[in-house]
Length: 461
Image 1 (cartoon, rainbow, N blue to C red):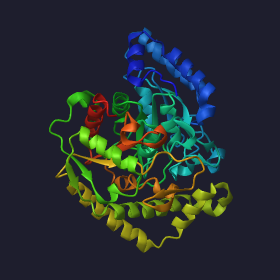
Image 2 (image 1 turned 135 degrees about the vertical axis):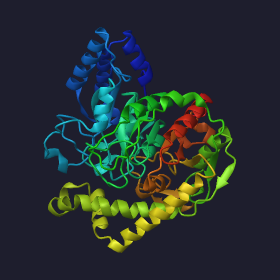
Image 3 (image 1 turned 30 degrees about the vertical axis):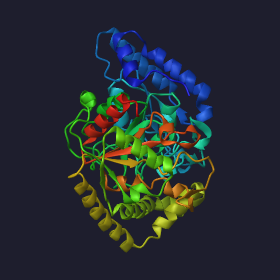
Image 4 (image 1 turned 45 degrees about the vertical axis):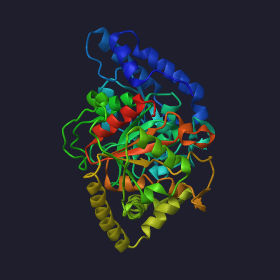
């Protein structure tokens, strides 16, 4: 891994004229050309576009115009985001014959309007249905901390590209944990905002009632800078909630005085390896979180997420399942087929459980402002590894990586993956990253950023 300039520092230097956006882009393109084979994070590099956007930023600076808060910052997007002139793959073979996108996704337009420079599209699990980014068509994305291990998924390329220093900011999606899982495995920050906070228009859907989009970055300031740029009303996404823009960057250093923290027990205190729970205790001590709470419906909420995901995903892909079954990744196809066979009464019951679980979780925020949970149940497994022992039981890896993230996605609450600065503090094996998940009530992303920044300043994150 190499350390490159972060988003905030890049933008400050470009805006002041001390650094040319074109020079930044050329350095990043050269680095991607030299090192992407190691990580396999990029599936498409938009070099001509990046150079043109960088030149436009430099021209604005030279003319005395404001180039935007992300002036010259290299960014990239999971390949389910539309990039004008590029076919949106969504990690799938089936999409490769489709026409290129006619325009950028809404969030891509938000970034470039803020002065960012788009470098390309990133590897992912097919149709976002997975937690490993072991893509049958594009190959596995490799963890920058150990190339023999997975980067997580389904936004594996988005996390790996940031952790590898190829770009400082990326975009990903999170339906059941696909931002927080790869962030945790790769040791970076990632936020899944409240459902409806950021527009999803121009992104390939997976599960319409669970899909969230959000950014990745190596530090909290860069994550806040990107998150603020992404906010904005979009009438083309009917699921987006019509809320005003609520910037988080100005309040980053407000501290955590007066905030109430709690650690859930039960489901979130089992189903994983010791280092994941140790990480929670490290963060709890740093934030003086002494309160423990019960969330009895968490496991049921996760089960509801499984069923809703299977049913909605299968319904979306049913025509291709009938016409082109051999063109799917077999693992993805089989899960979609299982979803197509679910009884309707199971899905209805899952929706009832989802509503009850949401009410229970919402009630927890009468006692606490932020919950501290594990992000993942173990450190990044080996590429190709199928099983792992958890709580003394041999457990399949793929369906269980999201054991702690799925319950939160199911009800749309905001959550942030926060990596420990020193994995050794939690005795993480092999020196691999380990992270916690901070969760807040709907629309309180600002609290997550404040807490993460406090942990960063304390040297914990």
